[in-house]
Every structure is written in C-alpha cells, then in structure tokens.
Amino acid sequence: MSSSREQFWTHGAYAVVGHNAQRPFPKLSYRGLKASGKKVYAVDPSGGEVEGDPTVPSLEALPGPVDAAVLELPKEEVPAWLHKLADAGIQRAWLHMKTDSPEALAAAKERNIELQYGTCAVMYVTPGVTFHSIHKLIMKATGKF
Image (tube, rainbow, N blue to C red; front, side, top):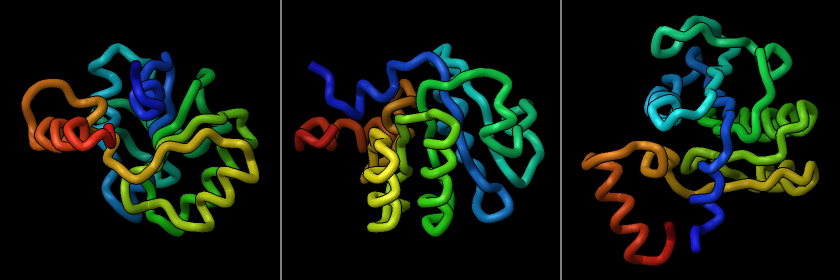
C-alpha cells in the first residue's frame, strides 16, 4: 500500500510554483514530473522560463487545470500561496522541506488543503541512482517514505 506522500505523485497535472527572484526555481521537481509524463506548468511571478518552457505569473494564468501543486518558495510566502491555491480550486499541495511553518499549516487547515510536507519532493520524482535515491532508501527503511 502506498503512503499519502507516494499517492500525491499519481495525479496527471501539476503546478510547480517557485519565485526565482527570491530563490532558484525548483527545476529538479519540474524536470522530474515532466520526465514521468505528467502535465506540468511552471508558475513564477518573476517571469522567465524553466527548462525552455515559459512560466506563468499566477495560478489564474494557468493554461489548463491542475490536480495538485508543488510549492518551493521562500517560507514566508507559503501561507499566502496556500490561500491562492484554494482560491484556484487546487486542494492538494506539497511543501518543499523546511518551508512549512505554523502559519502555513494553519492556512492549509483553514482552506481544507491536503498538505504534504517535511521532506524533499525530488526523491519522489527523480528516477535512477542519485543523491536523492539514497535519501529515498533511508526514508523507506525508517518508514517515513
């Protein structure tokens, strides 16, 4: 039986939200989702492109529906983005490790967002042998995957 963290990655379409002007865009998560055949949209209020794909500045600008969102933002931006997700009808989110906070958890609870947090998204979306696969083995061995 797969964990709720593993089930998060079974959806067909994702928004990957970053803010490149504040910290590097989450290219590994974006690339991993695309490589697994998912529909993936890069959302970045800073603009630009990711992996050769144009970004959209907001959730309202998404060209199609998404099932879930991966938030790899500065910690202080996360609660506001959780509210934006709920306003856009997105009820599943993954917070990159160390970006959760009491405010973020409260926002998710208030807006009924199914939230995954506390670990790195990349170990779930990057196939093959990498540093992240070693992390994955440790998490599986300790029952935290």
